Amino acid sequence: MDSAFKADEFVTMVVARFPELELKARIAWITTCLERHLPRNFRKAASALVRSLPAPADPALSDGDFGDFIYAPYAEYVAQRGCTAEDLEFSLAMLRAITTRFSAEFAIRPFLDAFPDHVLTTLLAWTGDQHYHVRRLCSEGTRPRLPWARNLTLPYDVGIPILDRLFADPTRYVTRSVANHVNDVSKKNPELAFDTLECWRNSGLQQPREMHYVIRHGARTLRRADHPRARDLVSSPLT
Image (cartoon, rainbow, N blue to C red; front, side, top):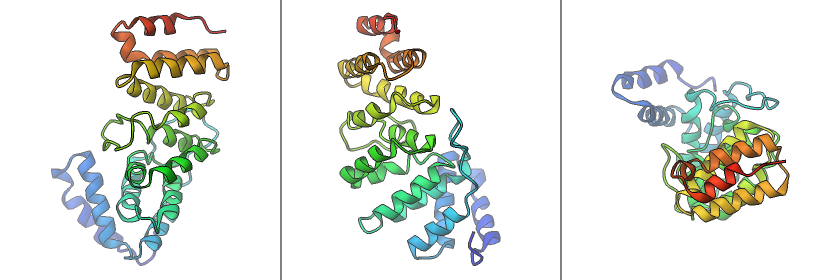
C-alpha cells in the first residue's frame, strides 16, 4: 500500500464496528473506511489498491474458489467510485486485476447496468482471457439470479452469447458457473435453457464427460421438477 496510507488508523476504524456487522455489511464498512483513508483522486487510489494485491491465483489451475474475501472491498471501492463514463475503461481494467485474486462478480454489475453495451462487449472479449478467474467473471457477473447480488436491469438472457463462448472451457470453475447461469435462465425460460444445452451438446466442442456435467447441473431445477425435456436431455447419450 502507498506509504502515505495510515494503516493503523484504518485498522482501528474498521475493527471498531466488526462485532455488530455481518459479512456483507463488513465488506461495505471496509469499503467506506478505504474511501476515507485513500487519496481523493480515484485513479490514484485504485492504482494503490491494485499494487497492494498479492500475486494472482495460478492461471494454470483447473478449478478454484473465490479467493480471499478480504479483497472484496477493493472491487466494491472501484464500483462505488469508478462507475463513470470517464473512468470506465480504467475501472474495468482494475476489476480484471482484482478478480484474479477475488471474484469481482458483484462489483461488475453496476457497470453492466450503467454501460451495458460497452461492458458486455468487454466481457465477450474477456471470455478468451488466459486467466480462468477472468473467464468465470464473464459468466458469473451476468447471471440473472446471482446469490447475494443486486438484480440486473438487463434482460435475463443477455449472457447467452457469453455462455456460448464458455461452455467448452477446459476448467470446471468456469463450466460450473456456466451451468449455474443456465439454471438461472431455466427458471425464467425453460425452453431457452433446453435449446441452449442441446445446441452445446450437439456442437461436440466440449468433452462428453464435462458436457454431461454442464447439462445435469444446468438443468437441475427442472430435472428435480421432473420436467420431461430435462429427463430426456440428461439421459441422452454423449459420444
